[in-house]
Image (cartoon, rainbow over all chains, first blue to last red; front, side, top):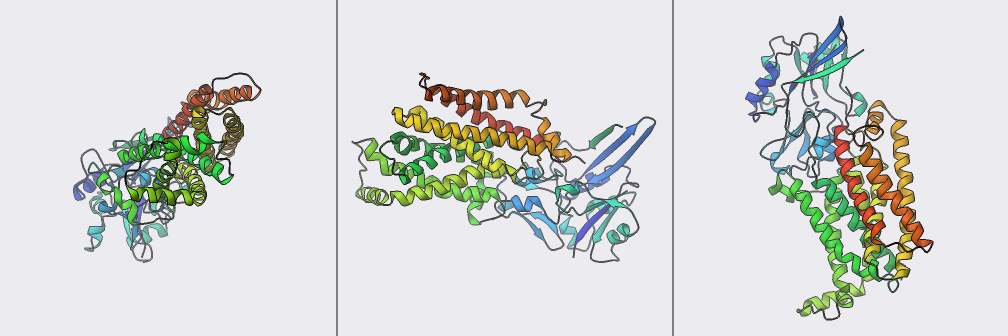
Length: 177
Length: 313
């Protein structure tokens, strides 16, 4: 099993619903977020292009945060989800430094926090909160090993890219372009 | 063509707009760790080479600072932790892939060893020293008996500690400025050089200062070579590396790095040491102080600048 997410950059309108849903679902402290919207504007007027991306932890296959963690608090669970055990985390910041996507933050309570693909919801057979609320249905989630999953179908006949592949982290967020 | 990135709905403390999760504690710790590594390495080295008699400051007096430097460094590290009550988690596991785990364990061994080292010389340094308890006297006799073994152990651990201060940073491939394997040897050499600088400063023997001065000159030359090499590597690297190097080649850190680290921290003290070896009278505290300050600034610059650099996407 390999959980992954495909984000349709052509459909995303940058409304930020995914951000708010995540903050509510996961009790993210005020001023912090586990997912966010990037507006990538390129070109010069009148030929301007915009790409909207809903970004979060890439749950990398070769996760540098897990490699650098001195206590094993950062670890990978079934399905390839990168998780942090709060009471094993010492808050040293090594994983934050090691993430090319700046997907982690230091929770005000001390430990490091990040997107979990809403593991607690997956366990109940539900989709992550961000996927659930997206009004344009631009977030596709599921198991890459299952050809009938939402994410596999989305990736099948679309062009896609991943962010900073040169970082060698084998990220598992796919951006449909 | 122009490209602009906006990140909406995100202003996380210490991460946006620039990563700044590590503050003054880390570079201070890297400096103190390197300094202690330098002092302890040469203490062990001169014992192994049976130069104890000629190298009194290196073997006995300078190591007095090492336990304090290590303790202060560890305290700085502790201050940097955000989840401090759980720090003991470092010692419930060994993570071979994590340099920080390596470092924590190395410190676990080298810190007590440095205390034992100093203790074994207490009576030689302070003839009226009294351990008060018989068991400590026995322990001292034991430590003196195995001094040579201890010297070997301390040399190996000091090298691991010195290299680790650099590897700690170079393991993060997300920060292109740090992600160069040359940082390990560079921090080691710089640490050894700061250790020597401190020993030279407190040495009363002219012969010892001369020997240390010569070694230090070699170390400074190697350090300059490694720095040149580091920039050659960056400039021949990917866009992210080139951008990282540009912070030092016209960017925000240019003056701090070249003036304070390279010129005042390396070249100037090297010239002073050459003059001293040529027979001119140079007060030894001048090159020593500049080397120590240069080493400290070097670590601050690397930690600060490294966190700004990132992959471009």
